[in-house]
Image 1 (tube, rainbow, N blue to C red):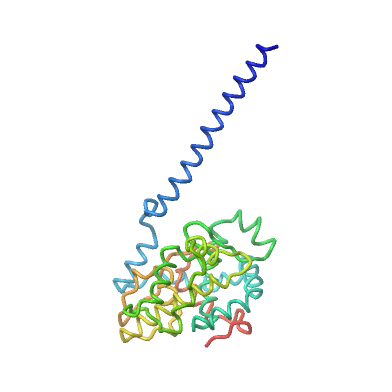
Image 2 (tube, one colour; image 1 turned 180 degrees about the vertical axis):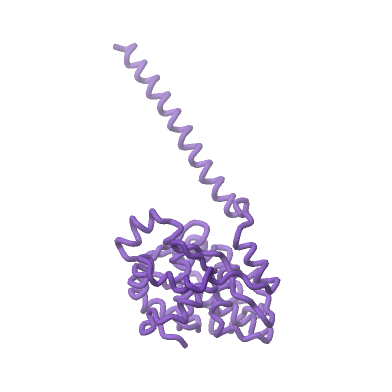
Amino acid sequence: MLYISFMYFRILKKIGFVLLVIFALIGAGFTGMYFAVKWGWTNTRGGIDKQRESFLNNTQTANVIGSQQQKYWQTTEEWNILKTALIKDKAVLYRAASASGVSPRLIASQLIVEQLRMFNSDRESYKKFFAPLKILGSQTQFSWGVMGIKRETAIIIEKNLKDTSSPYYLGQQYEHLLDFHTTDIENERFIKMTDQHDHYGSYLYAGLYLRQFMQQWKSAGFDISKQVDILATLYNIGFSGSKPHADPKAGGAMITIGERTYSFGSLAQEFYDSNELLDEFPRE
């Protein structure tokens, strides 16, 4: 009896050791992934880099492949789901637009593209969660929240609000819009941008992001406040690609919806110019 108990003990001990090794490997994997993302080891040169170069070199990128394909996105199931979800968020989006000083439809234009891209790139999540519940998709990995803003971009947006020497500085009335209220800034920022039950933070970052591009270009002598496709392109390629000049072209990442392909900037412009949700989010 004692021998059998000892055998069980040895077996349990081995099982425990194996489990310990497995959990240690899993922990090491997650830790490695965290630092890989944080230090940029996962960054690869892709379509967005090529679109950024095209924008900087002042060359025209593809807007929509084939004129007969324009507004195809309006006929899709994804659009009907997204439209319903966006109407639910009307009040909170308006509040963020008012605080950031931009048009609600302008913010919605960026949201439409980000969401359609997400719905079409992650079909499983779309079918399981977003479509049945008719809700917006919120990202939590490389880009955050319903507006798809990266952590590094969010930090620059925050800094621009307080740096009076920055070409993106908007004035004293905007300086405290993104202030933190705890000592755990990283966690507070993450929650603010990814809260699935309240998208205000995500919309506010997006509105301020767009407003900062407007300010930079206006200071350089170029008013792009009414150029939705250019603002959307800048929203997509980021601060490093924003070089004010007289003849910018729309572009950005290429987005495939069904059998159609759009650029980020052109799809945002198409929504803005369309009659979709015009009563809820009128053009300005």
